[in-house]
Image: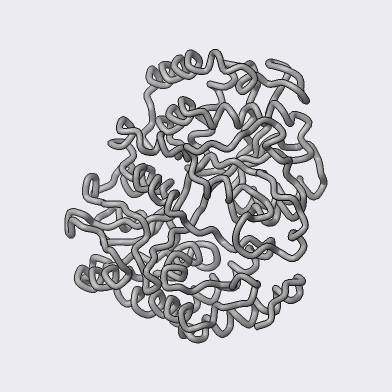
Length: 439
């Protein structure tokens, strides 16, 4: 995202202070934790582009309310471990936790987060329903873990990074993006050259390759589980999706796809050495179109293309803020979330590198030039996208699938090996965890 100059930031602060001056309790800490300058909110945040907007807003909130914001950053994997440890100990280390949406099943099952609606956070129709749903536990749709079936549904997390995986291509080469994965492959074959990848694969083991693959899997009509937690990763539709990635796309991909992560993919696109790939919103302005890019004005963005299922299914990767049950500043933490959700705050957030979730902000004409994917993201959130299976076993499941897919991309296994080996391991894992996995 484009960075604002110091004078612009001061102007943005003035706008926010003016616009929010009469908001009452939604911007003024109250309840547990005391008021104003006596309160410090400690936020556990992921280190990277995802918390750029959050760091920009923190001093604005302090200037308005006197509430100090202490942002403690950690790399992705380290943040997850720190949060699990803090939640297990039920300590008061963090007042707010920044969470990737596939972590919600773990934290929801642990009972680690406070319900937000009793603290005054209200759902808003300017935010896509799926955004509220992904922060709700137990999940309002799809299979529910056996241990969670009798729990009352509650909003435990609010999205601060609207994030749906989308598709990018070189629009200067072909003006229209692919409508289907058949076109994805046909275009990739047509454009593939010795120094120009027809398709750029993010194939590094575990989470990276699974993130690249799940939209393909779902768009092909495949899945990991059915509605009853039976493993269906080795059915015909899922196998076809695996073959598409590890055989068809690999044949027109960059060298060494099995070692490529998001930064590598973005570098290939930014340097003008690739034609198309999937992409996360947070990568677009910072890497694909960031400093040093050679493809300014040459890359188009669209939702995930349709697969044989007839649908194009994007994947959510929303980052949420939740309030740990151990926090001593529950209401003050909720007031900060409410302020972040306000439309004027969201616009300032977007102008400072944040990725908003409000439809009106994502569709704001004044933001489109600097954020050419915003309107696409708004449409993708309304589609709606899919989320990763809502089980606290997902990290282990993802590791299994991502390890097997990576082996195939490295030439060590076939597509059939991937689905056979991964499905066997997942069935064993889920049965041991008490799931009714019959197949």
